[in-house]
Image 1 (tube, rainbow, N blue to C red):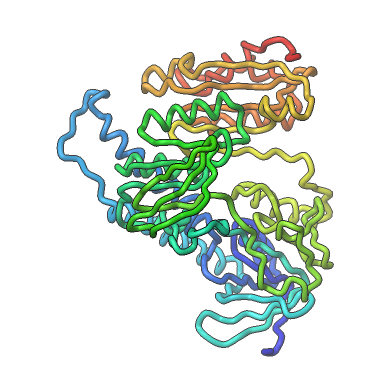
Image 2: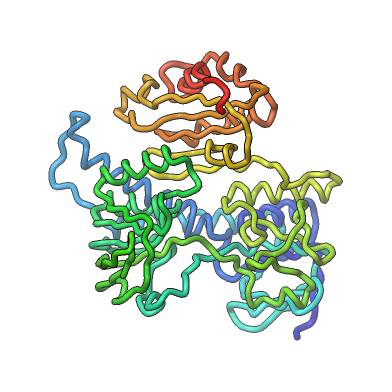
Length: 464
C-alpha cells in the first residue's frame, strides 16, 4: 500500500451529490480529494439525463419536420443523420466535462481519476488510470457511487449482447427494429425517440401496464400516445429466453396469456431499472453495511453504519433522480452545519420526458387508495387550456388530489411542458397552502400555467 495521504474529506464518486459536496467543502477552504473512475461529474452530464434529453430533442425536431405540413410549412427530402445527431450530443458532453473541470479547479478540490477500494476505516486505495496507486484517508468520507443498468439473468440474454441506455445513446446508426425489455421511464423515452428517428420499435413489459406506478388513466393515455406514433407495446409478457445477437437479428421468446410467441428485431435494449454500484469496493473493510438489495445502509440523515461516513444518491437507495441526489447533498451539508434535516417525508417530483410529458409530485389516486387517504379529485383536459389550441398540443390531462383540509396532496400532469407546472404546486404543498391559493392566482394569458387555475376550479366531492 502506498503512503497514506490525509484530507479533510474524501468524496468517493463525482456524481451530483458528490461533486456538489466537493465544491462546497473545497470552496470553504477544506482539503478535498474526489475519486472518480471514469465519468467526471457522474452519469447525468455524460451518459444519462442530459445526453438522453439532447437525443430526445433531436428526435422532436425530426418529428416536427415530418409533421410540418400541418403547420403550413412544406419540406422535401428531409432525412435523419444519426452521425450528426450524435456529434451534437458529444459536443454538449465535451462542454459539460470542461465546465466540471473548471469548477473542481475553482473549488480547490483535487480530482483523482482511478478505481477506488476501501482498505480500512475511511481509507481508500486508488488504482490510478494512468498507472500506480494512491492511498487517501479522509476525516470524513462521502460516498456517491451511483448505479448501473440492471441486466437480468435470463437464458440467452448475455450471449445476445444487449444494449443498455449507455450504448443506445451512443449509436451512430439507426436500429431497423428496436426491441425493448421494460416499460418504465427509460424505456418509454428512448422508444419514442428512436421511433421518431425512423426505427420500428416494440416494447415488451412484464406487468399489465407500462409505467406501472402511475394511475391507469395516465398509463393508458401514454400507451395510446405511443401506439399512435407506431410503437408496438406488449404487456403481461413473460420473456422466457433470448436468442440471436443484438445488432444483427435478435429474438425474444415470450409467453402472454398462456400462449408462446416470438418477437424479432435487429437490436435489443434492456431497460429494467438499475443496480447500485457498491460491489467489489471493500465496503466491509470500512465497516459500511449494505441492505439486502445492495444499497449502502443509511439513516434518515444519510449517515452510514461507519462513523463520519455518509452515502448519497442512487447508491444509498434515494429516489433515482439527479435532483434528489442534489437534495441529498443539501441535507448532509446542512446537518454538518448544525441542522436537523431528514429524508423522511420529503417531496419527490419527477417527470418523464416523452412528448408530451407526464409529471407528478405527491400521491396519485392509486397510492391514495392503497394508503386509505381520503381525497377530492380535480381534473382538467389539456384541450381546455387555450394555449394548446395555438400549438395543436391538445393531448393529455391535469389531475390534483385535495385532502380533507383543502391542502394539495398530489398533482399529476400529462401534457406539453408538464414538468414546468410542478414548482408552483410544490411550493403550495410545502407551505401547506389550501388549493384555493392556486385557484386565486392571476396567471398570464395565454400560457400553459393557466390550466392550474382552471384545474382547481374543478374540485369534486370527497372520494368514498
